[in-house]
Length: 568
Image: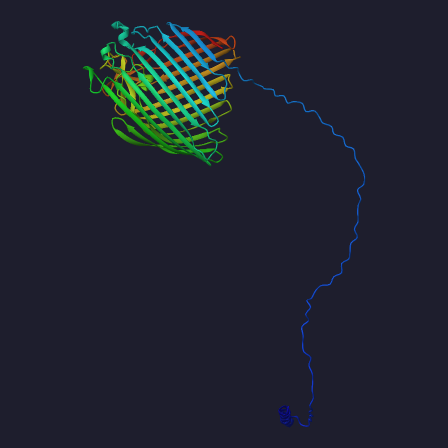
């Protein structure tokens, strides 16, 4: 305390020198300061709660009476404008024609069924007439077919068995030779069986597919000499055709796989029956693989197919081919006009059966080659002018190799049979058609075709027409009279002639015979006495033109065929 007072006195002395007359007095004292402390209470809000009065609303004892009326609902009635036509199981057609031409035909099938389908068809047509100045021209054709199938929601299974028997004579020779009818007779026997399984899965995530199996045996007539029984055409065909497709969005992906084997035999390998007749054994296998993509755009108005055909030809030599497959079309003005353009190619397996169905007068020993089309460019426009009229017009340019042509044979016959030769050619086709249909009352189709051939080794494409005009029509008059019309015009067919003649010309060292204009008009009339019984009459070759179906093979002139039909 003394040190503190001394320090204060010293400081006051020092400051006194600068303040003048300032006098300070000091004294001692004692001052107490209270200690600080923290309030141990937390802050809180103090509010006043005002109680609310409880109001009660008692239920009033009121009761309201209600009434209910139910209106009667009358059952709905459906009036069908058109009833489904009644179906009959059996249809029989019997007739007889000029030149002693009997006709018999039977159809049998089941009635309407969602699941099962089955039936049969048997037909016979023959002629005992002859053609003036030509050898025996009698023929007979008999065919029978049985079919059946099952249709389910997810799959279908269809099968068919057929047998055809056709007899004919090689009549394209003068009757002055007085040939024995058996020496110029021919008969083809055809037996086949086929079946197809198809799936119909609705789920788009699944792949739908179809598989078909086919077997066919085809043969010509045995020679009169039993020792030469093997010297006839015998053909066995096996085929497996399959297809799978998958749809995803606007695209459809498909894949075709086909394997077709054809075994043709005449006599034996490296054998001869006469000095001019040698054996033929040909085994031909064709394998096709076709992947393809189909796409739809612009509300399905635009459609495009793009793919490729991969073909393996196992014949005399094994060759592999690649053919393009592409098509584009676009629908304009609600399907009024649909222009299209495309490119395609492929290989056609020629068989002895297929050739005889085109020309039944060929030799039983013919060389078989597959027809190949490396490229075929086509385009056109189709559409509908109204709900009754549709049309199509197009043009195509194709290069075809090993095109089968029929020429008269003089090596193995006396000129009344045809041999098959092959040539490479460019083929241009212009085609136009128009169709008119008014319900089931009138149906008319008119087709015009123009062909241009450029063979490599021949002057002309023998027996093929240059121009065709076809009219097909049906007219139903009050469901009592039914008229049918077939009108066929052909022009430009040329044949390779054997001997000089007045109407034969020579080009490039080949004798050319013009087969002239063909006019074939057929008219049919059916009178329906009742729904089950009717009578018919058919007029064939109304122009009575004995035109050449093949070189030196004219057709019969005017013919009449009539008979009755009945159903039960």
